[in-house]
Length: 108
Figure 1 (spheres, helix red, strand yellow):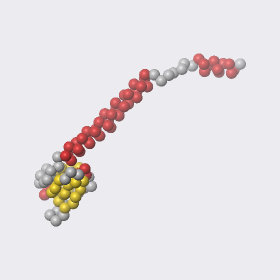
Figure 2 (tube, helix red, strand yellow):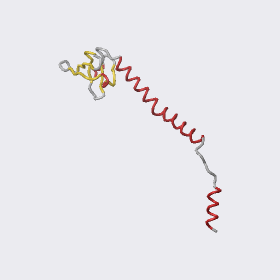
Figure 3 (tube, helix red, strand yellow):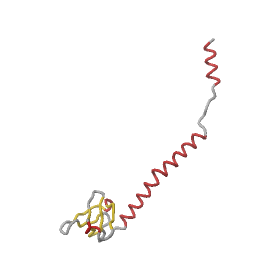
Figure 4 (cartoon, helix red, strand yellow):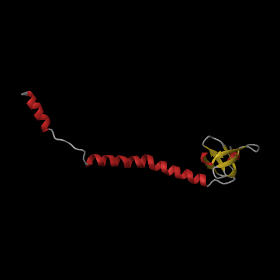
């Protein structure tokens, strides 16, 4: 007799299906994720591409590795940077992180 009551109780429980509420929640979660993580990352990458494209001879730069110097030569993928009067190094353009205003290296 008790089996009969338990089976009836399970049968009487309403069945919930995956509805629009869950889809809306996932959509809202994706929009928040986009504005907090994806959009700022895209904006920062665009600014870096513009910075790398605008590099010119004579610019004073700092690389992501901490190297500071003045650009002596600009190529397609590489630049030659003068660190001191006797020392020049060849680095990838993508490693440039900051372009300083003219005359900044004299104050460092």
